[in-house]
Length: 112
Image (cartoon, rainbow, N blue to C red; front, side, top):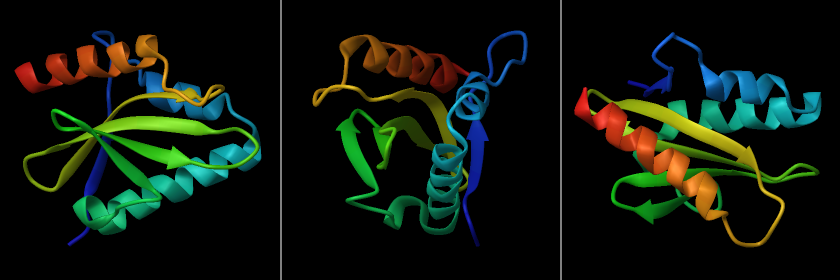
């Protein structure tokens, strides 16, 4: 059985991660879609270099290429993956601002 990939929604139902993905270059969109397909197929068994554990249940999907993209996600009950946040990585270190957005959304999702 494959995993189910869901996307964080704002209170008004906007899927901000998908909006971000659609704003990327077409080649990068394809790479992100492939990353989501790998997550759906392998779930928790998908490891480096595709994913990295960041602690406290938060993981990142690593998309390499002309545009480096990082996608933060968590696992949920029932073989579900909830994608929380994504951004274009421009520096070696993950910006704290981006990590805070993901952690805040993680707390919000885990309260539901």
